[in-house]
Length: 140
Image 1 (tube, rainbow, N blue to C red):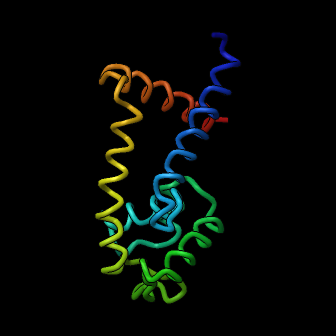
Image 2: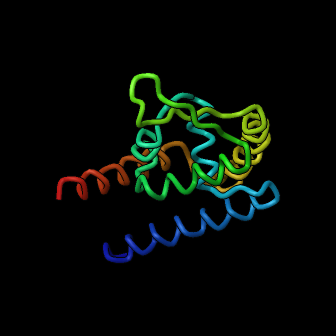
């Protein structure tokens, strides 16, 4: 495989994973992007939209749309930030937490299914290579 094909392979694998997750989460009415935000908030509540955008490496406007949908579904709530009146802190609701717990099991099973044939060493190598690619792009 030549190096030009590697970028296509990364995009292709990413697209397949996204399709797989979308299908797995469909019955719960949640997208992979919404799942990512719920997952972040389940580990650290009270963070801002900006912090979530940084953690997900997504555009803040796209994250706002995801947050709006999660709030509309009563899975998260926004509260005025006590330090910065212009900002909001985000919290997962009990409904959001229940959904998070259900989908966590599905997410884990899907991950195990997708990665069953990949060794720990291969994962480690892949992670190192992808990090090098990200860092190389960030330097430009």
